[in-house]
Amino acid sequence: MVRLRWIPVVLAAGLLAGCSSTSTSAVDSGVASVAPESQRSSQFAQTPGRSADPAAGQQREVVRTADLDLEVDDVAAASAEVRRRAEAVHGYLEQEDGYRSSTTLTVRIPAAELDRALDDLSGLGRVTARSLRAQDVTDQLVDTRSRIESQQASVQRLRDLMARATTVEDVVSIESELTTRETDLEALQRQEASTANQVQLATLRVGLATTSTATTEETGFLAGLAAGWRALTEAGAAFLTAAGAVLPFAAVLAVPAAALYVLHRRKKALKASSL
Image: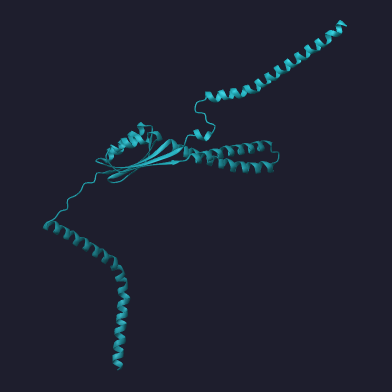
């Protein structure tokens, strides 16, 4: 009887122990499930400037070009100074077109130095024209780079197929398609490199010309006589030039014209004698 009275007490103690262990495991699992989320939140909080929208923090890619026209006293000295200042900011001369009293230089300089270079070069002479342009090519570069990645994956798949090819026909077919896709990939890479280079290095065209000086018009009898003599000589030269151009044709046409004239005279004489 004594043993029977202790049975309910033992059962109750066992039930309580089981409930406490179940609740503890449930709490532990809940903590485990929540912990990664809180860790992720702390990671975001520790990263400065992190945005849920990647496009919000995307750096824009811009191609910058500028034109600067100057009147200077010495074109050669000014052009040498333009080249020197371009090299000083790690740029280079791309093209130079020189004329009798003017020259045009095209230099490539880092885009970040373009504004300062315009201000510095403006001090070489009198500014007659100045312009600055910017073109956003971010979307173009993103699209090109995405196409490059897709094309690289496509080329790799064809290379894997080539490695597993067992017949000559398969090898020839895959090799032809692989060559085409590799050519397209190289074209995309060149396009991306060219655009990226234009973004990194701005294009600056500098036009240099000698300072224009106003000439005083000469007046008076002697000035009029000189002007008349110049007009006469120019008119005489024009007349002689025209005569020289017509003379060969006149010489060729003179013979048939003379024969027609003689024939006409004979016909007229015969007609008069018959009357």
